[in-house]
Amino acid sequence: MKHWTEGFDDDDADEPLVRPYTITGGRTTPERDDLTLITLVTVISDAPADNGPGMRRLQPEHRTILALCKQPLAVAEIASALNLPVSVTKILIGDLIEAGHVRSRPPLAFAQAGGLPGMSILEAVRDGLRKL
Image 1 (tube, rainbow, N blue to C red):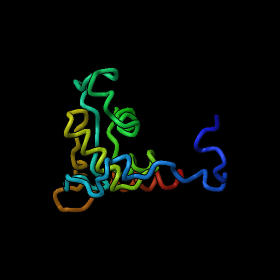
Image 2: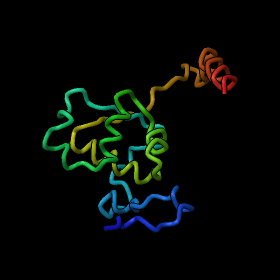
Image 3: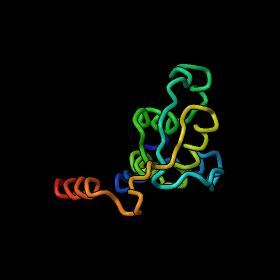
Image 4: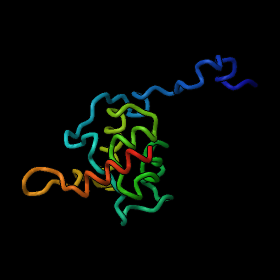
């Protein structure tokens, strides 16, 4: 018996076989408007165990987000790691927030009272860019 994917052209190997709207259950826009590209997402430490009953209902992408977010990550970084559009990633993150698995927060402000970034931040960015 042949697998249903046999015979596909190898040229399309970079394209996902599952459409994003299938992953999100047909939803095309996130319900939450507080998730931006730089919103930080992290796993809640008292979230259910990996093999709990709630975890079985999660998509593989949800589980990947949980694995990635043991340390705070920005929404844009999560979308990049999943190789999914940001809008789809926001929907998945929203599901996890609603289920109590992750929390989100805006990034911490780094500006000084005068509204300008501190010299140490600018130097750290410069040094980071030089390393690239």
